[in-house]
Each structure stands twice: as structure tokens, then as C-alpha cells.
Length: 157
Image (cartoon, rainbow, N blue to C red):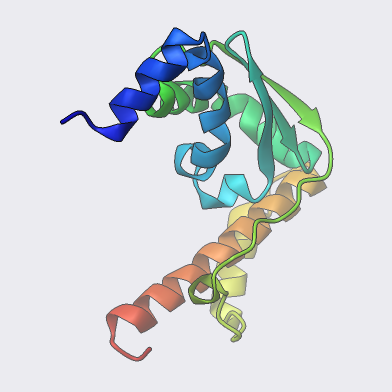
């Protein structure tokens, strides 16, 4: 007996829709391709003729993603199939935050003074205030997530 996915692939291919299906899969696999942090700041708008258009919520994230284009293309092609994405175009715009399940809500506690000092020490030499603020935010989230992981692993949850 054939898997349903194989049968559907054959039907889509027979109707000339296999390429379009691959293009639409980028929406469902976006978070897996780029990770949760980037997915909160960037969303795919379209994938046509192997050109992925991504909307990004700030110039700081646009700069970061422009540096990550080769890696994103590689991960997208690994997830969607080779040669699905050849180039990425970034556009600035509003990105709605994905709904997070209750188990992914951040801890209500704040960072310690030592953790805040460590973050400030890491970012103090960054000239661009937008990049500095974005990195501060990412690092704060990382500290909170690590606390949550320790809490879960320690069996306190």
C-alpha cells in the first residue's frame, strides 16, 4: 500500500502543482527553518521562481538576516528540497507574533543584577543603538529561557 503523501505527490505532479506545493510548504516549516527567535521577527511572504521574500520587523533584524541569507537558503533547501530557494529578498514591515502555547510563556521573574551587567558588558561597544537594543533583547530572552530549562530539568515545574 502506498503512503498517502506519495499518492498526493503524484496527483499534484500530474496536475502541475508540485512546484506550487513546495512553495507553500515554506509557511508551515518557517520556524523549523530559521528557529523560534528569528521566526518572531521575520515571516515569509512568498516563494516564487526560487526567490523567497521575507518580511522583517526592524532594520536591526533586517541587517542580521542579510548576513544569514546563505545559511537560511541552505536550511530552506534542506527542509523543502534541493534548489527550492536560490535567493532571499528582505522587506521591512510589521510581523505579527505567532501565538505561543502556554508552556512557552517566559518566566515571570526578572533577571538578576549580575545577568543584566553581563549583558551590558557584551553590548557596550556596539555603535548602532538599534542593533544594541535588539541584541540586549535576544540575550535577555536567552537568560530567561535558560532559567526555564533549568527549572524544568530540575523537576520544579
